[in-house]
Image (cartoon, rainbow, N blue to C red):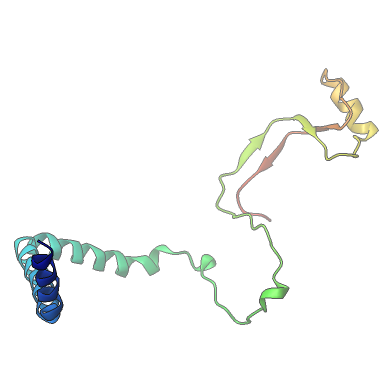
Length: 137
């Protein structure tokens, strides 16, 4: 049994190049057959991709296109939170807000909250109703 095993392994080593060529050939033949059988589906997919690529530049608003004019070294990069102007304008109701540790509400905000029936706890403030979203003026 061991002798047969060695001869099989030796045979594989001797015919390594032929086995690789046969494997690649079989994979290529299968790919060609699948391509021929699905020719119409492949053409339709290719056409839809071509249409998508042709339409894409028109779909991107000019305001969102950026061009690089200067390269900043990595050590000088500062994180900036960018708020997009694509948000839908909406109203925010008046509400209580928790303040960062150590901050206190102003006397005016404490009085306004009391007018609305709220007793502010330490570290809270009153926020008036406001509108947000949309393009900034």
